[in-house]
Length: 252
Ligand code: 48H
Image 1 (cartoon, rainbow, N blue to C red):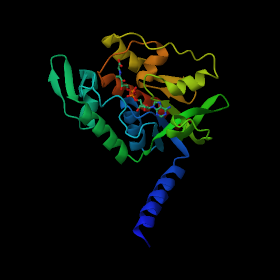
Image 2: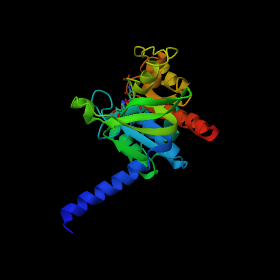
Image 3: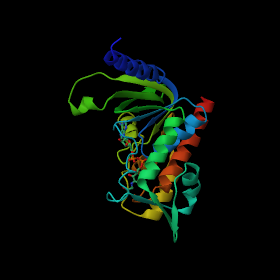
Image 4: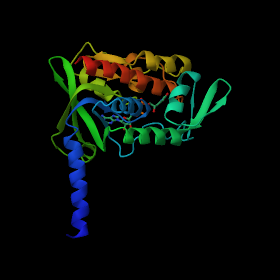
């Protein structure tokens, strides 16, 4: 058989096997920034069937640019154990730690890739599945569809829990808020690092049955201040989202 055909065949077979295996899962994580990557990694590592979608080709969200493209991130003592756990080196500088943004993104992506989670990059969540007043999955499409302004109907993934880790836009919660007027999106507050960093973790919650919000999306929904390029709160938020999602999966 021609090698050209074999290469195409292998890619199609492998991808579609993975895609088919992703259609009904325990958890769908929307967004592969720091909070979503860490939540998905922890869930998959525990053996939960987990899918992570990101509309971009490369995962990592806002990690890569550190602050203003300066690829260094900071964090506080309370999240040091997570950096150690995923093997990211850091140095203490007074009250804070510094680490490489590239190393953090690389480590999270590597851990997730090896955890058993299914990764659908270049695919975005364009809506939610809502049944019996519970969020039961997402509606997905290729990221290129809206860019090309094409009319192409989506496909669906059903799940026991969905995690909105879409960062500043809180896209999944916004799809819910269009249908449920009790969901009010307050918009993120102005910069206040101490309040924002802790607030991210505090506001990580099951905002509606079956929908957990974390990371900057949790801030955006709850009106909590932003906190700039300090990423410990994002990982702690991902950890909390994982714990809440796990409980939901177990009790479902
Ligand atoms: C699929 C989607 C969709 C969609 C978006 O912004 P992120 O890095 O997310 P967080 O919340 O884990 O981390 C926030 C952090 O990076 C940050 O911006 C900080 C700390 N800011 C502080 C400040 O003051 O500004 O990543 C979100 C990811 C991205 O990769 C998007 O491509 C992806 O979600 N995404 N993927 N379907 N509908 N919407």
